[in-house]
Length: 167
View (cartoon, rainbow, N blue to C red):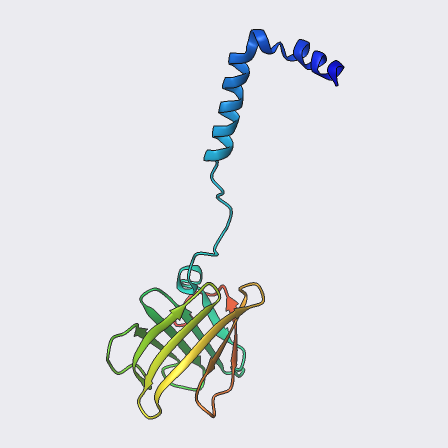
C-alpha cells in the first residue's frame, strides 16, 4: 500500500501541482453538473404536445373513402374523402370547449392528456355525453379510439404522412 502511495505521490506531484489538480477536478465537476440531458425525452409532454398535427388514417375505411383525423392544441381536424359524392371532400374543425354545431357534436372538451392517452368528453346531439379515450400504441405509429357508449367498438387509426386529403 505504501508503494502505491509513493508512486502516486511522485507521479501526480501533488505537493507541486495541487492547485492545478484542484482546478481540474472543479472544472470536471462543473461540466458534469451543468451538462444538459437534451435527449428526446417526451415523458413530461402531453398527448397534444407530442402528436400535435400528426395525421391519423382510419383502418376501417373502404376503397372509395379516406377518413383522417388530426389532433392539435386548439381542436380536432377531421377529413373525409369519398369518390362517391359530388363534393368528394369534407373538412371539419372541432375546437376544444366551444359550443357549436360540429357535425354530430355540440361541444368537445379535454378531460385528461397524458403522454400516451387523451380522454375527451363530447356532448353528442342525440346520445348525450360520450367519453372518448384515445390511446397510443405501436411506438406512436397507431392510436385506438374507444368510447363509453354501448354500441361503440374500438377503432384503430395509423399514422400517415399525407397532407390534407382535400387539397
